[in-house]
Amino acid sequence: MSAYDLPKGAPFDASGNWTPAWAQWLTRTHGAVITLQQSGPTAQRPDRLLWVGRFYYDEDLGTPIWLHAINPIVWHDAAGNPA
Image 1 (cartoon, rainbow, N blue to C red):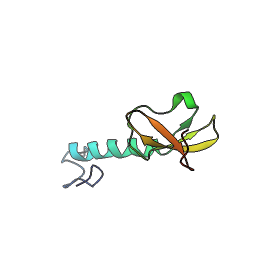
Image 2 (tube, rainbow, N blue to C red; image 1 turned 45 degrees about the vertical axis):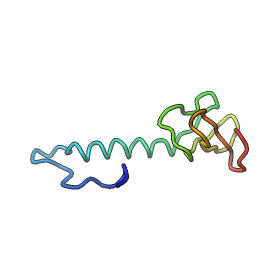
Image 3 (cartoon, rainbow, N blue to C red; image 1 turned 180 degrees about the vertical axis):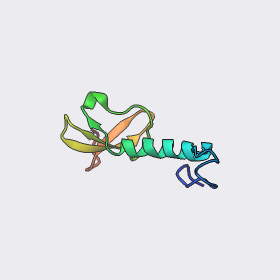
């Protein structure tokens, strides 16, 4: 089971509130979707919520880059060059 598999059970409780499992899933999924849209200058590259393959559009370089390693943090461009 993946962190992004839908939770079992109803999404709402009897009062119409999100159940804890569904609230956690929505928070996690929202965070992942937000990272797919991130862009900015080189100095503001993400340093948390990292995974290999994570995308970032570097506005200083004018190109998309992807996270190649986490410890240490290493970014590469589409050609595989360090960015």
